[in-house]
Image (cartoon, rainbow, N blue to C red):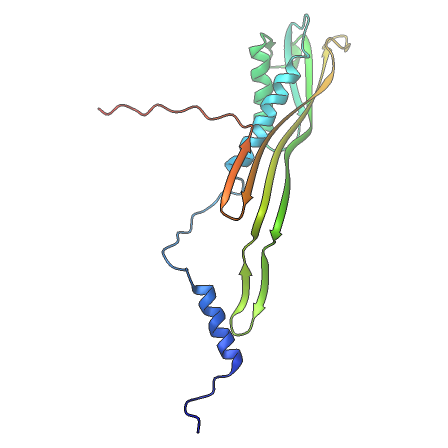
Length: 211
């Protein structure tokens, strides 16, 4: 004679799956509002813009007089910062900038061929999976990386031309200059992580003295 109840297999499977899913879960989580773009993305693009602007300004040699910077053709993410980067480098090079084109001796036009980010990913392992489980619903399993890499590359491609405002003739070499910045994250055996980047380190801020 057998005593007890017979438990159906699907129910057992469902309970086991629920136990696995909920194991290790707990604690308090906070919902923090995130902006649409990360600081890392903005740093990559702005650093690439800094580097291409510095290289671009080296084309401006000779007698230019006062210079008006025409940025009407410049497009791309963070173009306002890219414009300021070019202005900063021009001023650093000793170029006098005019506020209006009619008061300038030289018109300098800049445009962008790229001002954005490339993303690439490499994984040796098992990608993240999502599948339905009876009585539980959709289950998601995390990525298992024996070796994994995520690379973000900020790229800036700026073009420059310079002409005499009255004659329209070129007064400096026209050219294109590139700038880039990368942030490379590696994961080994799921728990070992390290980072390679050529982003400049932010300066350390001095803590204010207590009164």
